[in-house]
Each structure stands twice: as C-alpha cells, then as structure tokens.
Length: 491
Image (cartoon, rainbow, N blue to C red; front, side, top):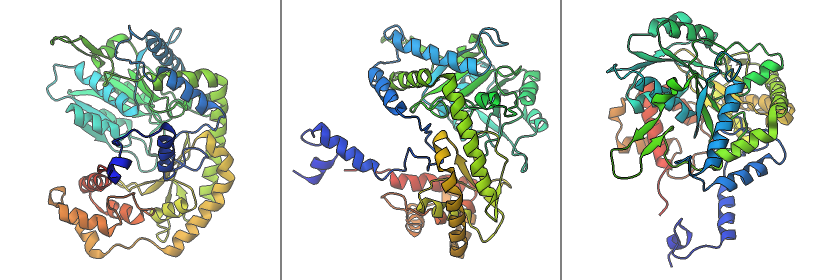
C-alpha cells in the first residue's frame, strides 16, 4: 500500500473514527486560535462557558435536515422564521413599528446576503439593460463580487480621509437613471464607522432607488450599544428609505458559521430575490437564497445560541466588548508613532503609524510572533495602511496584556526597520500589468517572498509591502496567483 493510499482523504481501507479525529486535531494545531481573545479577525468568541457545546449539539440535531423543501422539514422553517423575526425586531421592524411587514431569509453569510440584496434590486428593474449600484469605497468587497457575478455596474463613492465616510452629496451625484441600489454601511468593516444612513437613504428615496444597509459586520451589536448609552445614529428600519438590511448572526450574535439574515421592508421588495423554475421534468425548484440544498445545522445552532443568550446576555456581552474597545484604543494611544485612524464607535479599533521608521507590516509580524493575530490593511486612495482589530467579548480579559505587547512589538519593529525590497522588484511591481504576468515570473516572485506550495510564511511583511507597491489590478492578480499556489490537491 502506498503512502497516498494510506494518508489521503480517500484511503483504500477506511480509517477508525478515533484516528480520523486525531488527524483533524493534529491539522488544527497549525491554525490561529479561535478562542482566547488573541485573534482580532475572522472569528467571534463571546467567552461564554458551555455555548460551544450547546451550539454543536443543536447543529448535530439538524445537520442532515435539508432546507430545500420547508414543507418536508417544518422544524427548519420554524427556526428560520424565528431568527428572521428576532433580527427584524432588533433592527427596527415588526409589529408596532414603521416597518411592520418586514420579511427575510437566512443565508450562509454576509457575502450571500449582499449578493441577494443586489439581485433583488436588479431583478426588480427588468427594464434596465445596464443596471448600476452606488457603493462607498468603504463598502464591503462583497458588493464588488455581487456586481461581478450579476453583471451590474459598480459606481464607487470616495470617503473623506478624516471621517472615513462618504459625503451625502457625492452619493447623490453618483445616482443615475440606471441605479437600482444605493448602499450604506453600519458599520464599515475596515474602520468600524457608521455611514450617514438617514441622509443616504433620503437621497436614494428621492431618486426612487432602493437603499441597502450593510450591517453584516457589527450591526447586531449597535442596538445593544445604544441601550448602553452610546450615541449610535439611526441606521435601521426606523429610517425612512431603508429598504433592506443584512446582519450576520455568526459575528456578534456569536452563532457558529455560517448564518446571516437578509431583511426587506416588505414582501414585495423581497419577491425578486427568489429563483423559481418549473420548465423541466424534475421537481419544481423555488429558492429564496442562492443555495438549493442547505444544511439545517447552522440555522439550528444559531437558534440555540440566540435562545440561550437572550437580550440580557447580548447586552452584557456588548458592555464587555465596549470596555475592551476602550482599553485597546488607550493601548494604541500610549505608543509613540501610532495613531487611531478613527475614534472607535462600534467594535473596531483601527490604527496607523505616523512614524516612517515604524513599519506597520513589520509591527503586525512582531505581534504575531508574540501570539497576537491582527489584520493588516493596505494603503488605498489616500488612506494610509492600517491595522484592524475586530474586538469581541473574549478579548476583554486580555486587554491588560495587549498594551505591553503592542509597545514591545513597536520597539522591535523600529529596531528591525522598514521592509526594504530590491529596487528592481519595486519597479517591476509598479510597472507590470496583470496581463504581463507569466507563470515563470509569478513563480519567481513567490519564491523570493517565501511563498510556495506549503503553508504561508510566518512573516508576511515583505508580501504586504510588495502588494502595497502594486497598482490595485496587479495586486488582485498577484493575490489570486499567490493563494493559488497554496491551494493545490494532495495526491
């Protein structure tokens, strides 16, 4: 028997269950820690004892239930309707509000919710041959993905370099007769600031255009922060002109991935979201979301999570998170050369460096070496490179440790100095077009940066420096090629 037959995903002879689980645990040992408050991106940890076990048990109860046919599995329909109702009530909709007829769907995540919001807006205007959407450049990249998939033109609106928000006048000027959707973020992912939703919704309504509020990232927390006294501006269905809202439950509702909710102000607005097809000899297909078959596991896990935590639990977690944000912001302010890019107003701490000797990408590597996993963001359109911290409740017990670690990492980054790439490499990055990239050139660049077919290198400062030097389209192509090197089959 060959090694491949023994160790591959499809061995000749089945492997005992205990050994398979041991193999998975061994693979997981190389991952970033999903718990413990040291990972500031990708995962959302409330630090609530027993919640993981509850969600896992609920997931297992419904893992094999199929959301394709709600008449066959009414349990899933009941849980999905309950999740939609909870999200709608939290976000200004439901009986007794100005949006009593809110309806919605549970999706696999924020990207699917945003794609469906764009689809509904596009399909509501079949008279337009070239529909367009207006999105601030701080809007999530999933809107660009939706525009690409759905062949909708994207009209980006710049943001103010100080406020990090779009000017309402610029949004209004970007609206054309072909515009089917205008977007606002509450809050934006990169910087954690809330767009002027009421004003943006007003100009959209005046133009007869739908307005979607992307609250996927931190929208679940904003209502609780408001209850705690934070000056959260209007952003939900209480705002006239807001026609749809997306909010991810696998973020600050702390449900396992992947669960998001897409809400529409009324059933008529949601109707174009559906896909139905009967012109074939099989079953009549009707899908409210992109997927046909859907596991009930994530929906059941989200239902269990919301039921268990309740309003008092989310209010408590929001308070803990708010205090953690304040502590982390103070830690940034205490380090010479670092500056908050925006004063925190949600669950994000975002900072940059004003000291040219303090390379942010080296700082990120130094923090990683000390067990703190942050998210670097490249410079863009006059906005400086920055470091993004997504703050969850589990971070709170670690805040006192982060300040000294940040100061130590900054000192180490200054001692190491900025990344210096060969001048010819920088010149190449600045002059190449995506079309000029050849396999040999890509392989040479990757090898020079320590990228190969194995795991990504521990230190990424050189990679990020090269990407930052490249124009946006070349940056995108390089990312595709570099990630492609990592995603190769194991034979």
